[in-house]
Amino acid sequence: MILSNARSTLRSANSKNGACAHSGNASTISKKPEETIKNELAQLGKNGQITPDLVFRDPYFLDFLDLKDSYSEKDLESAIVAELQRFIIELGSDFAFLARQKRITIDNRDYYLDLLFYHRRLKAPVAIELKLGEFDASFKGQMELYLAWLEKYESVEGENPPIGLILCAGKNPEHVELLQLHRSNIKVADYFTVLPPKAVLLDKLHKAIAIAQNRLSGGRGESDER
Image 1 (cartoon, rainbow, N blue to C red):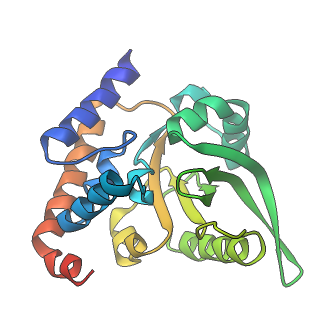
Image 2: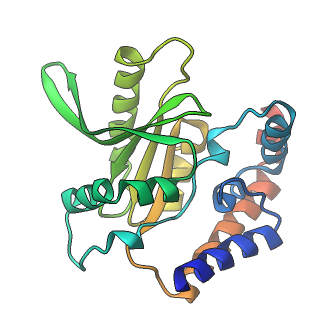
């Protein structure tokens, strides 16, 4: 009940502050320029075409994993796989699980992608990397490498380019902004393995709203160019 109330608080507050939501994704959409939001929602209403920003959430609540105070990335991944159905419910509809620890070989060097999903309506693979700490700039290069490999070696006809989702314990929004990830196929989101107090959730919401307002006031030229 507490988790449900907290989610309701986040989503209803987003709605009151002018954010539009689809599949519980109000906080992500609210950070985009207003004109872009209108275009994406109009596109959805006109021909049913959905965009990644209408799919991915921020943050994700993973409290159902029941992890202990101290855990590793492997523990987090194993708990997600064990509770895969509930994890997919939290991700949103239309996600299908493909692989865990997907091996990617480049120049005789092996890399392992934590989780690989497929989104039916986006018609695209979704690569997910799990990080215990805060977002770091190096995560972008790692994900770009994985997405490029997936597109080169595993894409099929009629499929859209793969999308990356980096789940971090701390998003570091200025890093994300300076790296211009909003222009790429890489999404970054916070996750919570224990539901934080309501005050913390509201603080994150207010910061998201402030970022959105700054972009709306200072980014109109950028959205017009698009």
